[in-house]
Length: 293
Image (cartoon, rainbow, N blue to C red; front, side, top):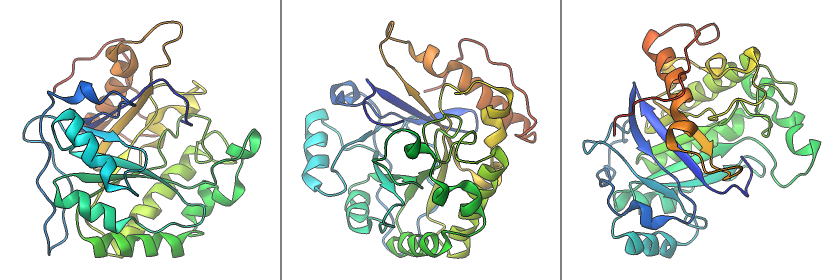
């Protein structure tokens, strides 16, 4: 969701296990006692998919400017007394920026996996224009309209060779991004087709060092049957990790972790466990869920 939130938590599941979280804006002291980082990237062969943490949990942060200034990560690590396992950065497709190979390699050499939130849109627009961006319509992506850029990007990721967490088309069950299934002339079917197409492009280019993260929003907006998260599920062969974004606005009161994530964890875990067609699957959504850390 656009900037200005009080705090954003992201959790990531593999199978039915919570394996990674969290991005806390400006709250580095909360991370001091969390488990350690994955090992450094291999120097020759391509890294594979990032696996579950042997310690039980990866922890990481979104650090503005970290992809441009190495001191940002170094200061953060010094402040919390530990190198983060994951550092995220946002990249918008407008202008077709390259994969940030140099900072990614610097992070990987220190045991930190870069997470790229890859966003097909032109940011900075206001009002209806921010969401209604026909150039970035999902059907255009699925039909290969951005294949030139996607293939160049995949080639750059492959050349880098280290582990990469790629989170694209996130929060698709919301109505604030041009790739949302209920805006910009999109459908949930277009979303699945676009995701699968981009995944296939990376595979064709040999960028097998990507770990693919599919991330719905914790609250579905609009909350309709047509917009349920399971209708966006690309299929287990196209997804490595499942994430959930949730926003704690603090209004009218601060929300608990279970309030923010419980129902969506149940929904996604049930769909994954059954292996049902995600566009027709149904799942119960209890108000609270047990979690393994």
